[in-house]
Length: 550
Image (cartoon, rainbow, N blue to C red; front, side):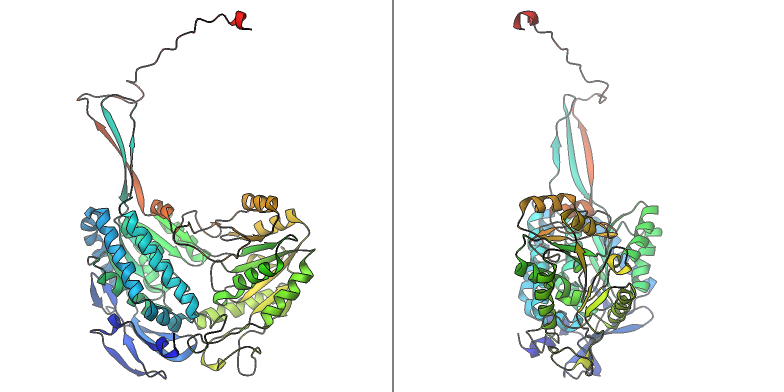
């Protein structure tokens, strides 16, 4: 993929849409974006807008989007409610066929979507490619679930009676996702939701509205009826809050949220007092343990990627790197050598970089605050110097750092569990190093943070691997693998401060978007009462001479 591909727009976006007069240094016009409500392109009711810019090249403005009002969110909710009866009544295999069409359209437009995602949030082209592929995989997986949305036939304890269970849709689902995975995560949520017969109002991430707009148009091009998925843009404190507030008004039957633990707790409180289901996929301080029996080179590679891939902007990024004291020096020598060689830059221009910019200026500012917290905790800073500028750049930064928001990789050692930086997630390219005395100490440290999303251990001792996977309090564990990475058919989610136990992906996510309906079909023509009209079975004493057998 060439740099020019990075400036390409998905052709369905350009069809019938207005270009802004703004001229980018790239030479590409910026797009005027819209909400998609009941299949129609809509501006904000008060005309307010915000802009999306390229974090690797801040002068590159991709488009202008509606800053949605409460009225806009409510219009989307009305469209979803109106579309629900017909969509819920659509046969599940037909719903699956529409989802399959989405997957095929994503494949057709994959290269353009990859370039667009990299341009809008700064991921490397390889990572954006993996994420778009995950959205494709999700569609193809759930297409087949349309023919396997099974219930059960249950034997009754009474004669001439049949018992059945069915999956039923919940209703209207509010979908709120973060901008670090702007294509995979909304598909994780919306595809199983509509597979089960629900309808959705999707609040796009503020820092990835153009990609969301492109995906919404692909969704509708696949044959999805109007109103089944509605897209609204805006801020979390605006459109996002309006969507959550609608739970109190009885307008939302489900919220699915990916983001910070603090916001997740607020959403959980609103849903809890209304007895509304919510799925909360939240933060993490993910531990990775390295034991003496491990392949050290493999462990270094896994820890390096877990800490600094995607500029550390994954909920599954490595937080606490826990090293057994016997291999500490060897590991750190090899690890620091890789850290110091890290190539950073704009992936659309330089394809061989490990990571690009922060997702936005806001994420950059939050990261720098986190670095100050780590410094104030008393940890030893081995590497990293904040923002990358022309006067403050690591040797392997490529390009002009003044164009975007780039950060050094940071390493803090001598971290102990009484330090704030041991417990708090720092969203960005940083890792905290903790020394363990033995396996029991390492497992204790791995469980000592308030989070429980992802975890990993590098060991070639099978007993240690077994004891780790049974003793760790986390939703996911890698054995001789990094903390980051997911597949479309495996459950994704955490425990403790990382989530409320619901899962994304695979067949398990169906539980989050449906409820079980039990049906009791009486065929006898008379009233039969369970537990009361059941004939008792008499036990017969066997004619055995027990004394003789003894």
